Image 1: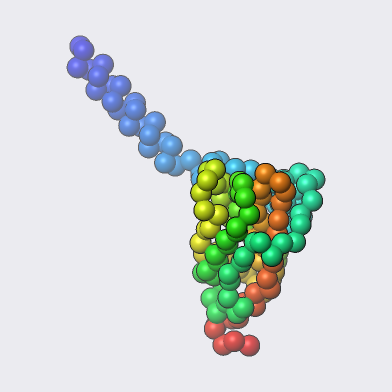
Image 2: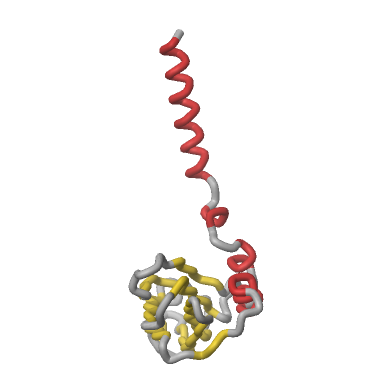
Length: 150
């Protein structure tokens, strides 16, 4: 009888774990309102409230001028600012502009690299949240169809 109980608990635990694997990843997102926003301003408001964004040369955004394949556009964001809490990447003209948001632990180097999807030519925004404010830089990226550069 004791063996049946252990087996039953094991199967229940296994099913619970399998159920978690099926939960959409969006439930684990930091902010569903920001990820489901259809323009950049509501996404920024959902993430940062009414805090002002300051253009800064302390935020470095490395992204190609021309993306030959909008499905995989490499992006690197770095910053030498002190107290960086998060780095966020938005693509202004995407149907859902918020592409990625990274929370950083205190004392970590503020540098992330990822690949984003771009549906069309657009401004790419890199937003860095610190203890002292929110800083942004942007770059226009041209997405070509078929990689022809035109």
